[in-house]
Image (cartoon, rainbow, N blue to C red; front, side, top):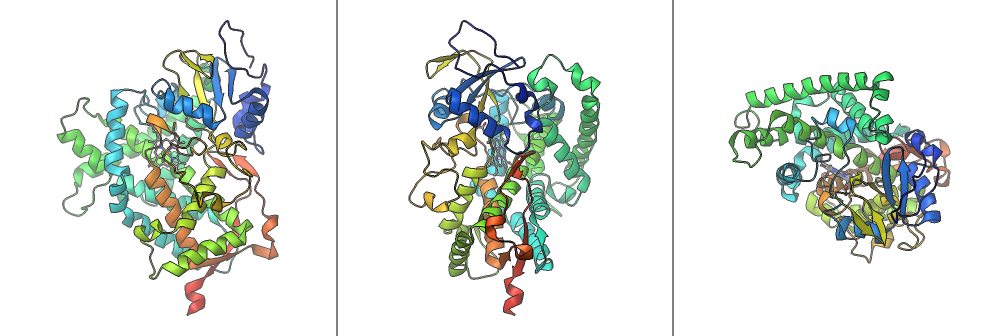
Amino acid sequence: LVKTKSSKNLPPGPPKLPILGNLHQLSGPGPHRVFKALARKYGPIMYLQLGQVPTVVISSARVAKEVLKTHDTIFADRPASETSDLFFYKSQNIAWAPYGNYWRQMRKISSLELLSAQRVRSSGFIRDEELTHMRKSLESLAGRPTVLRELLTKYVNDVISRSTVGDANKDQPRLVELLFDIMKAVIQFNATSFYPSMGFINVITGKKAKWLKTQKEFDNMLEDILMQHRNNKPNGSHVQEDLVDVLLRIQETADLDLPITNDNVKAVLLDMLVAGTSASSVAIEWAMTELMRQPDIMKKAQAELRATLKGDTITDSEIQNMHYLKNIVKETLRLHGPPFLMPRVSRKDCTIEGYDIPAKTRVIVNALACSTDPDSWEDPESFNPDRFEESNINYMGSDFEFIPFGAGRRVCPGITFGVGIIENALATMLYHFDWKLPNGMEPHELDLTEATELSILPKYPIQVVPINLSSSAS
Ligand code: HEM
């Protein structure tokens, strides 16, 4: 991986990066930390020739703003990818579709019909039911050391899959397994991530055959789901529309500029199923890890919840008044949000910070470098929800020192949905339970080492002992 010479005024960058080909295998300091360390030497805009792919890495709020706001339309495309073509029906999902009318239409439909604040409110009962299941599981585990990861992943998966494809696939472990295989294939680097013309490597290593098998099996499941929904339209036994119902209704009745095909429907469904799952459950796990390390912060959050909440369930409007809880979620996403935004690619030549960025350059924004930049944040590596107390910084992508959901035209459309999933889970866990560490472990002994998998997650899944308050009160 060697930087090529060019007559253009490209941004500075390291001449040789032998480890970058193995980014996905790095454990310990994740790739975002490698890039952050490099940015200290080369600056907030770096140029790297990664195999055949010219790449620019952005590591500060100032430069992120130039890319995601000032030149938003130039960087509104995603790079073509072998895996997104293979799994997402030729990249016909929202996340990988090229910038243009098709992407605009499908994003608008999903934003209005699944992800708008009103829709998220009206489907809130699904989240509440899944939280009740999680609470019951925790009650049954009370007093015993419990690894939270599996419970949290199940909760998030069930909320997102029920809202998207209905109850048909609830508790189908195979669907979840396949989703994880697909996420891994799409997110993790492979030969064609750096050498797009060398697809034969994925054939020789057997990766492609494995992907095709997974895709076929998943496609059959999606076909079954579409058939079940066509045979059971929401008027009799199920009244509430899920996203499949909505897409099929629009497919059959709406007068669209671009008629929706079955493949379009399947691509968007898959998009929703994979998009926020890992990011949301990992955020809850990190929040609990940080709170167990700092019991005073946990106590303050519990005091806020317990002083205000009355009943057994927690409503959306009650959550809106839980300012400290909301600050904890923000602080968690500041320190442990997605390291990189999904990659962008420049649609034409452009100048950023005086450097030439040629058309078709891949752009990686290191969101965690922006949200832990000492120029923007005081004591950036410490977990301190109070830093949001007097600030208006929000998730919407207007504060470039804090962009866990990205910014600009490609900003995450699932912010309200995703944040609701995290806030409600934390509120339930902190309101109904007290927590201690197992085997006399002290808070400072908790290990914050990161592992790089689908997201950056705690290398050692947190183990805690739930103490059920309702049973101790009775
Ligand atoms: C904590 C939870 C979540 C986080 C941290 C997160 C983060 C992100 C990020 C960083 C991007 C790339 C934005 C950019 O390029 O500027 C993105 C895109 C996207 N997210 Fe999320 N997301 C979350 C939850 C969700 C949920 C729950 C859904 C839907 C069910 C969702 C759907 C999408 C879609 C469809 C895109 C692609 C948008 C496009 O390319 O136009 N996300 N998300």
